[in-house]
Amino acid sequence: MTSIMVSEGDARWGEARATARANRTRRRRIALAVVTAATLVGYPFIDGFIDGVRGGAPHPTPDWVLDGLLIPLLLLAVTVAWRNWRDADEVQRQLAVQTWAVIGFSGFLLQATVTIAAKYVPLSNPGYVAWLISAAVGIGYYLIQRVRS
Image (cartoon, rainbow, N blue to C red):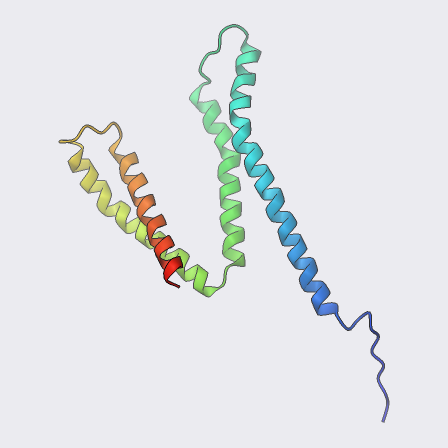
């Protein structure tokens, strides 16, 4: 019978791999948080910079410029959602799907309800109000389900 020698350095390779993965995930999340904070804080500075380039009194920045500046923010939101989806297990994914279903269903019902109510109650933008209420309903559903589990 042959004896097999196991070196001490290789005995904990699984733990080292898991630690390295956790460190990469932590660094990625910190970088994403820094980019998100810089993006959100940077928009007013960009608006002020545009006013400074124009010279004179501040003028409102054109809507197309501000809309263009939102593209990186939307890409960031999609990236965060994709990473969270990949890191989630089947229970978290099921809760996410159910939450989106609640948001969609409540938005479907609220769009008609708020549009009808806008005839009798002064609302400047009924679609936006319906969207906000359906988002609040979805957040409430998510929080209730998280507390219950």
